[in-house]
Length: 110
Image (cartoon, rainbow, N blue to C red):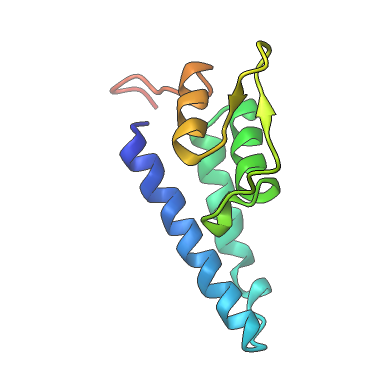
């Protein structure tokens, strides 16, 4: 997956999260309304990423709070050489690509 597509998808998730947060601040709780959508997004990401890649994406979005659009700077992850990885969306994509965590489907194959 090219970075432009990866960023566009995550940006849409961030925009949805922000709308839900804004509604919640107005005391409108719609979280359970989108359970099916959340599950669909999870299944789609799991079809694009292997298990390790999906774990890193989930860590970035939900633990590092990348889903807010402003990932936490105080929460870091390092590779075996102690180099910081996944500090921003581009870094996450580079790491997923470098480690070959994206599933590749050959053209014409199912």
